[in-house]
Image (cartoon, rainbow, N blue to C red):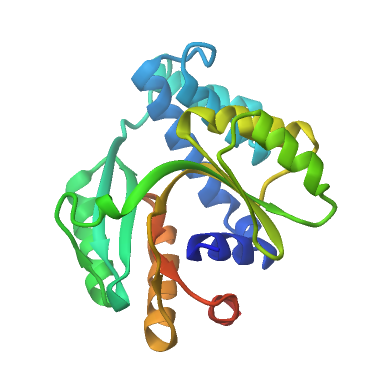
Length: 249
């Protein structure tokens, strides 16, 4: 299993996702606003917006919050204008990092991200210094508890999934970006709510980390994910689940 899948699954089990619901809502509101600004407020003609609305509903975001964020994006309501920026970086042990940001101040954001990286054993990279190591894919992680494997696999594959992996305590589904929405809808139609479901930057290969390097990269991941401007962080680390659990204890 990828390090990021373990990371997402264990954080969810420990309740970290619920504890950071405010951060989750902020991230989704930014994405709704940017998606609506880019291609309009009608989800029928804006696939990106349609996907983010599904994420918002899955997170139990109130309908009025969703509508307000979309109206801000289309200019019907006043609001902050966000820019999308992606930073490439290196972390402890040489791990590659993709840091996705939405910010109203790119100068502030890059300065703060650079400071956090240098403080915790990382460094900012140049364009395409690590991006070539990743591929954009639809990615769903599903807890095995109470889930029928055959029904889940059939629904996912029929909807266009490319790969279906058994990861001991969870199922991992990977799709082309174009098939992600259909697969996500098919999975949820079974009454299954994924631990994690998103368009992800998945590593082509993984870097095994342990000991101090593993602890450092996990600490850096937490700090970056807590930053107000950071939407998501992707990395190519592979760390044993026990070490991740210990870091979140």
